[in-house]
Length: 134
Figure 1: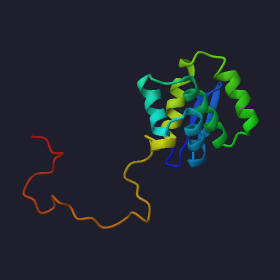
Figure 2 (figure 1 turned 60 degrees about the horizontal axis):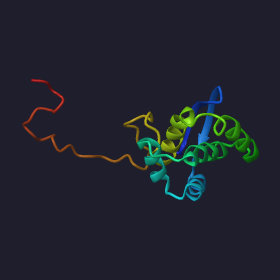
Figure 3 (figure 1 turned 45 degrees about the vertical axis):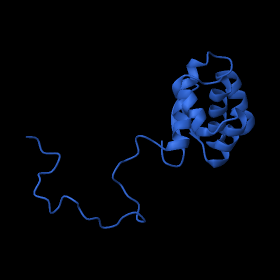
Figure 4 (figure 1 turned 135 degrees about the horizontal axis):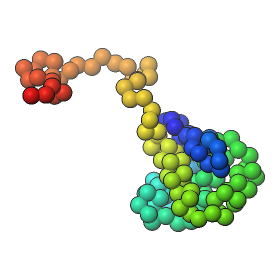
């Protein structure tokens, strides 16, 4: 997963690349009649609709580079012909990556545009660092 809205998730018996950029998020919004974060909330809270699962997976496949016809056929066979809960976690991961980015992205690495000198607010303090144990 990464900040570009992509992730690789086990699907259809193999690791599959999904990506939700702005265009795909708009398509999900139109199909589900709700913004992407509302759809993600429904998926996570258990208030999902069937199309929330299938549309997220379909547009994630298309955004990941799969031809639209192939994605439609795969969703029909591997999502719509199976119990919804079988693909719920996949839809949660795919839309989560598209909306908020990836949880396993390296923390602490900054891009060149963000790197700046920062002053420590505790540098001149007489208090011990908060990570020390008593």
